[in-house]
Image (cartoon, rainbow, N blue to C red; front, top):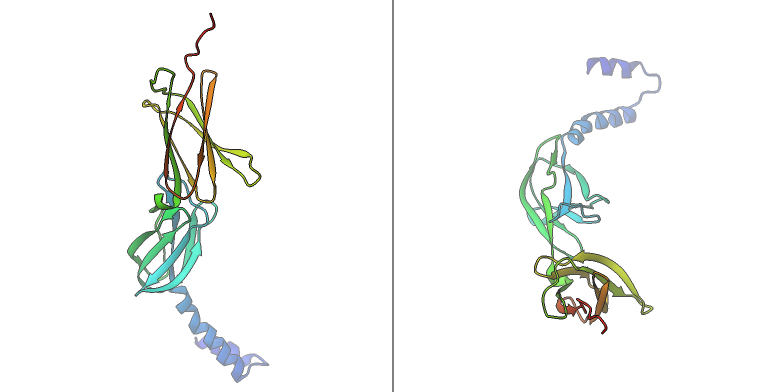
Length: 218
């Protein structure tokens, strides 16, 4: 400190205003250096990062800071004083999650890793569950099932596909905002479809019967 004062005394254009500004910055630096932060990753139940998830830091019932996760679900929030905080995280189509009493220390960024996991909110999802059968009423494991959604122009667009399980069952999920779904089942060259009108977020059940085995002509 004595050295700094001597240097400043010898500066030709040094004045009282410059001194006040210099010492203000000098003593403010440790305060900034002592703040901490929190980082982590918001994931779904399958372990995949959720982009655009909102993360809010709360203390004593007040929202202090917030951010959104990046394309891989990662986030960082800094500028937090030493103490314990509650973390609320949410994303469209998921039920909100929370972590309580997360401790932040001076000058340290607390890494939560992938501990922020969100689960689908079934109340805001369109869920389709169904089964595939043959002409004799037996289940068909291993049948390929595709889901299409109806667009504004009336055409159907393929969204995803899966295979029936050992019980001949399948299931799909989709966010709200559509009015019709087409389910197509395929098995060894035989195909059949069912259209489902969508009114709201709910569970829709269907069954598809395939003309298998095909009857041979006499």
